[in-house]
Amino acid sequence: MSLVVQKYGGTSVGTVDRIKHIAERIAAVAHDNHHIVVVVSAMNDETDRLMTLAHEISAQPDERELDLLLSSGERTTIALVAMMLKEMGVKARSFTGRQVGIFTNNAHTKARIERVAADRITTALEQNLVPIVAGFQGINEQSDVTTLGRGGSDLTAIALAASLHADRCEIYTDVDGVYTADPRIVPMARRLDRISYEEMLEMASLGAKVLQDRAVVFAANHQVRIVVKSSFSEAPGTEVIQEHREMERNAVSGVTYDRNQAKVTLIGVPDTPGIAARIFEPVAQADIIVDMIIQNVGQDAMTDISFTVPKDDVPKAIEVMNCVSQEIHAKRVEVVQDIAKVSLVGVGMRAHSGVAAKMFVIMANEGINIMMISTSEIKISCVIEEKHVEAAVKLLHREFELDKASR
Ligand code: ASP
Ligand code: MG
Image (tube, rainbow, N blue to C red; front, side, top):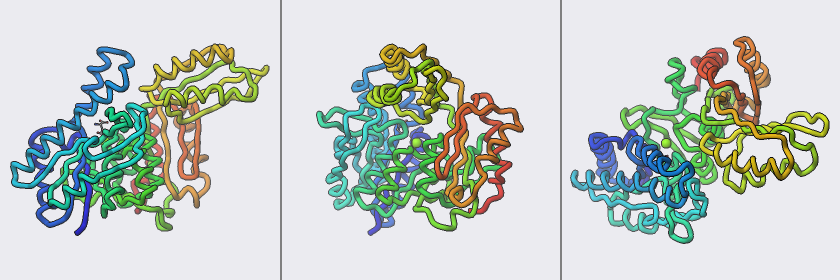
């Protein structure tokens, strides 16, 4: 008997009507005699709503309490979905992260999964029940609730699919797959039939919001076959799989952007050995994820170091940097919030040269200033002023002919 894990995102469970709609889809799979495990997110913007409440109380809410609060969104959904299925005559049962046995480390609000027990899920399947699992949550060693970072229901689904050796993990969202660019900005954007884990990872971490980046890493490590689909249509979606030769035909597979970064600069840093370690160790200890780092050429034994962090982490980053700045006798800390990152992604970059140069020319012709650049084997990212981001995405999509490419 085949086993599929299906994950439904916030919009797919946003109202009772929508819950009814997905319950019908789930029921159809169960009636076809397939084993199915369902993972759900919180309804619509529920997590944001809870987050806002917490921030009305504190600028930096206690993270243990915040996790407990946020996890309640998914608990609501599992109960409603299970009720709906039972109403339709399908044997279903809801499970929280704790009940499933999703064990994590102690990094509240972005915990890592350390072990998935899943015995209760296996037992439920043996009893022909449809398990409805709360995404996004686990428990730490003390049995306190932890959450897996925003978008973490994807991770729950993929970790469960790996642990249960499911045939595939279907991620249902409000778009019908992964596109060459955000269709809201580029109407000509095309849906990709297939994409490699690596490309998906780059796209996910670069701001294409269909899948959580950490979930993609987990899927690649455990070879979980992912299909990204819409719960509102029957379209085939995009498969996320291992890279193969065919994929290299086009240099670029997609263009993405991310408005959620801020640039932190430490100005007037003594240019001596060990300085970078003294700056970034406390940043890591504060669980702040740094993306790009640039150290300028030193002058008079002084230098500037800039790096980007998610906007949410700016208050924490400022706090840490103010401390570090005093310790290492830097001049001052500067934060720029209105930046955005635009990136080109494609495994084909391994086989095609000149992609970076072409990207810079396109930006230059449009008078867009590039503040930071970073590259990997399959990606080029530029940090630019936020106000230019839409124009840059449109232009790059057109100039790299992403509307025409075939894959
Ligand atoms: N509800 C959580 C969030 O909004 C987790 C998820 O939807 O995947 O981030
Ligand atoms: Mg999501």
